[in-house]
Image (cartoon, rainbow, N blue to C red; front, side, top):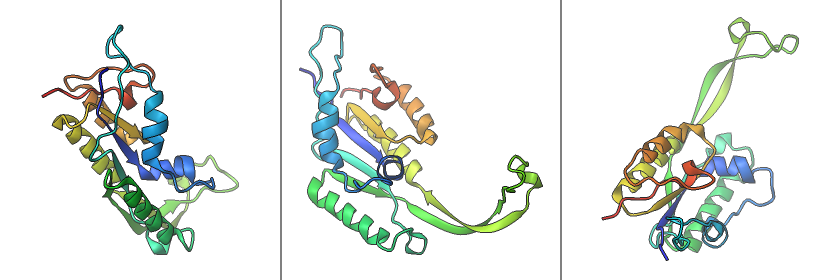
Length: 200
């Protein structure tokens, strides 16, 4: 039975705002989620008559989690900073070194933004007044994720990458992975699970 060494790449910002933010379930055990729930349920045969492949997570670094520390002055909740730190510490302890955090950072700055007039919401931005607002942007996480994804694929450490995001900014990185020798399309979602690493 073939085994595909698998590593999961998580966009922490998208995971939180896409799935967890408005729920009571903030402390997601991402290692168990993939190791016991998601990967064992995927049926993939390398060839038509082959045995189904198993998908063991990489024994050393199974998950790379891309995120940034919350800025206290911009946090929405009084406990946001401490809650994030506690969750990260819990994951680090629970996963025993099999999860690696790759940190970006938040940028907080003032910017001029166009106001949408209540009496004319379809007015073009160029014809609207401006107001100064605070802007909070996560920096480097997307770039870090794309570079790690591509570099790991080239290294032959893994046979399969699983990307957890809905950020279309990562589409070029996925297209580059698909162009690598050894790419094999998978049924269902070729972008998320379509790369098979090159052998030694």
